[in-house]
Image (tube, rainbow, N blue to C red):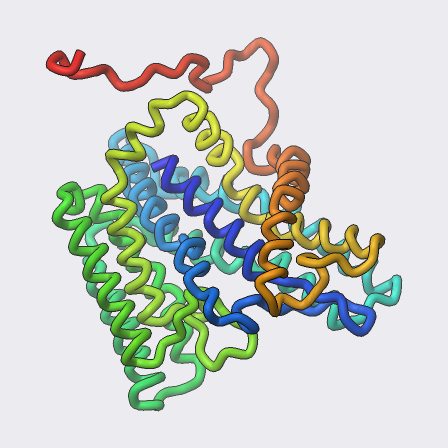
Length: 370
């Protein structure tokens, strides 16, 4: 579960860094995407749009945690407070820093469009936290909910929006909770033991893949699984049926890889990396866009740098952007060091031993394999 959560977080981070570009033009910075200029790069979004896996793990962990809390005699309120505190505590630091930054930008004459673009990117991760917090709060009501029910909601909403072209403009936003409720309730089904077999995982993977391919090829859904500026339809804002079926395929693949990931986590270095990401998962997620923007703004001091300030309209831009990723990662590491205590809470007293396992032992071998 920790490995899947780390993969999901890092997938989102790398995906945003690859498909988001801030172009220096007319004295300001404007947001665009290489997918807008090179739609053939849509498969990149298939690799890095991993939010469904995060909701799958989140639903599994939350329902298990709730069952454990009830067995201990804890109240729902205390359980929910503990779950949401670590989830939402890092948000305050982000909001405070960007409130100061936005004020400073406006006072120094930065174009309003540039300030708006930067704020939108910096605060865009918050939508995910709001949805995830809402689903976490509703966990007692969702422990037995069949994933087919929210899937049916998404199907009917899209039928009204794109098939019949009827209904109010806000109708699509029903898919925001319903779309992510599908993998979340799959996580609850995992807790109940309904997804333990490889057959169930294969059905999710193959069925989700086939459904997504049909929707893209025959129903007019975009191939990109992230939003593209200027596109008529976004698969993610709000989620469409194609995004949900794609998420089903991702969840199936994640379940198929459980045993391999479990064996891989027996390697101390891999486990240490996964543990490091999980300890600061929300900090990494919240600050990754800020790290990219800080690098972009600082780079302006040296002029318009390729892959950082230039238009993402060529393969050359992609090559330059890949070279910038380690720099983004370094700046993100600085942000993590500066703000991780907001997520992890106060430092441990020096005379108190750490609960972190200091020696990693691989799973015991079976007698026949010893």
